[in-house]
Image 1 (cartoon, helix red, strand yellow):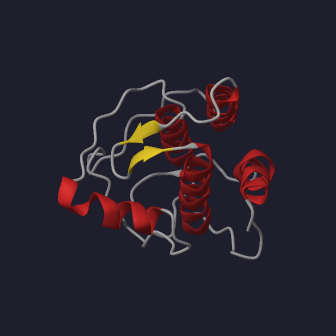
Image 2: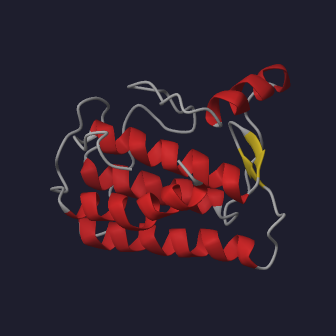
Image 3: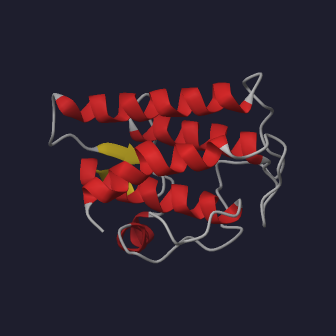
Length: 158
């Protein structure tokens, strides 16, 4: 799958899928409802576009192995723990899932804009280290696919 295919998934297919979800729908695993998941994806995009400065949390001796996984085609496992998140999902930020989707789409625009004037830029991911545009797209695609599977979108697209 090319970087452009992943961009198309993130810009078109994934948001279209999110439009079909009820805000309170529960996933096949995990504790977030659909709207909390969308807002979680927004936060991930905010991290990826450099709005939030992050320190690397992964121990240095594990970083290359973590990044190797991130850049692979292996999916995240169900119930993958994120040490930045509590066991209780964050409260809903927006009054509707549509507003949450709109914010996520804006974070995507901001992500692309972050690299427009500096294509060689890298942004620090707290788990996988410094990522360039293509690496970030790959990771965001992997992350979106993980949550799409969580909420019932089959692997037949994207």
